Amino acid sequence: MLGRVANGIFWMYRYLERAENTARLLAAGHRMTLTRGPDVASQEWKSVLTTLGLKSAYEARHGDYTGAQVSDFVLRSRHNPESVLSMVERARTNARSCRSALTGEVWEAVNEGWMSLRDLLEKPVRDANLNQCLHAIRRESTLARGATHGSMLRNETYGFARLGTFLERADNTARILDVKYYLLLPSLSYVGTALDSGQWDNVLRSLSAERAYRWLNAGRMDARSIADFLILDTRFPRSLVFCYAMMRQNLSELAQLHGEENEAHMRMREADLRLADRTIEQIFDQGLHEFLIDFIAGNQAIAGAIAQDYRFTN
Image (cartoon, rainbow, N blue to C red):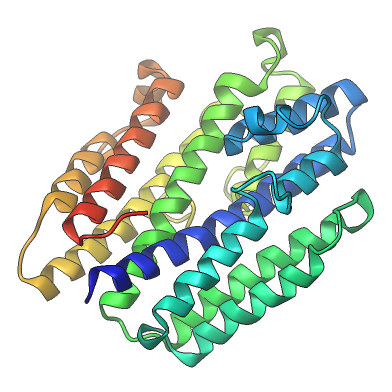
């Protein structure tokens, strides 16, 4: 496969996953603000921007944190090059550049999704239509992923698509956990309070994990149990170990196709060692923030190695 095609596929699926993750995070933040006072609501919107790495860019344009302003900036603002609309447009541009490697169903899902969201986000986002916008983003990403799973050959194209998806998903899960544990709570005095429990519930909702977690942990809502589920549970498709298992499988299949392993495989093995046979007690003893920062750095190293090995860049 040509490097430019691998690049297009890899980043197309990273952008689709990132757009969906952003919509889920906004939805969780919006839900939290509906049940809290204005001061807590402002902090919640600030935490959303912090998680997304957009706090500085937002503050350069706005002086306060309101739901409408934050949502509009994150979803469609021309002053935000990392807006959801920009991500979906980049995904569509990448899909168009490598159409010959995609099935008609995948191209149609991505192209029609972009047109639908472009029209929907043509006007400023308000509280009244925020849920409609967020639902549409999640739906279009799900349709593209479903078309991929249901119509694509299990070849190099599929391997790069899945690598992009799960690398981005792992990064998102780690960043949300880190912001919650290290930045989100205003004070250690809140730990164990209703606000703390509400914030952890919010983390689960932002990762589509709330119902699955409650099925397995009825009545328990504490940091260790939730971190254990989001980091180490092999059954949950957004946990760190699940994402890395999928990445390891896809890299192994690429190695078989190419007849050799390379830098990305070495980085993948190093990252696996950070998760292998770890317990949540060991992770908390190390420090959850320190563990997650290390994980995020390792994830970025894998992404860089994939780009180098297969001769493409962002």
